[in-house]
Image (cartoon, rainbow, N blue to C red):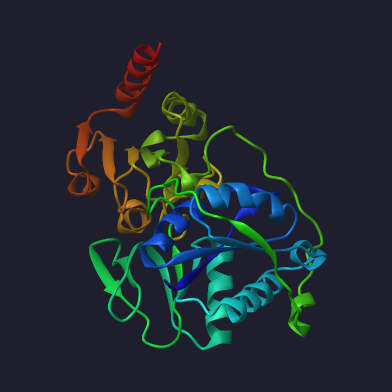
Length: 320
């Protein structure tokens, strides 16, 4: 069976959930070979092997931390040349898509971004994407070279499938461009204790109807009762009510959770583009004609200041 390269997204050896999802998809089309780079790369092997990686190629060098994406592209190209895979899978983050694009250009292959599913085909892997704000689904395959595919978080289940996970050192020769852009400083993001927005199984969002930053604790309370991430519409972000890092939509982040709860959000196309692939959508809005109701699985016509606190209380009561 052909091998499939999987780029590992990890933090000091702790493998992030989107990578484990990629391993599930990789097993559908071949044998996963993981590529882990940077500090703690060797420590990823156990988790990767548990989820199906037959081999784990690792490399650590100062360049991975001190410079932007090019050193990682150099390493992934070295892995590609060593393995000759049937496909390369990369998490669909901002950095992941840049790495994938640069790699595809170097190896002369086609690229598919923001896939939400992957299956084996007679002429190579077939990726499913959502198009036109998720109004349509398309199936695509690359016609030249081994496809480089980025996959959105929450597109596949995390499934245990123990494999050998043999650790092998990857030899990397850095290109002249690798040190072109240096990282001069890092500021750790303050932890809220909530899941990462793009990876969360449940997202609770607030929009213009929240009517002020002082009212967002109502949204946060509902999110915390569900163990969810907090999102916001562009209107709420532009008004300064919530950070841009939490914006869901065409100019923010795309999410695809199991459950999305939209509170006081009208449902403009820009917002729908970022959340329409959610598995179950619930909306609370006092305007019965709001476009969001054309999209939802369940809709509540009512004032969020009445509905959301009652919902939070009921969830906490059932949990207690």
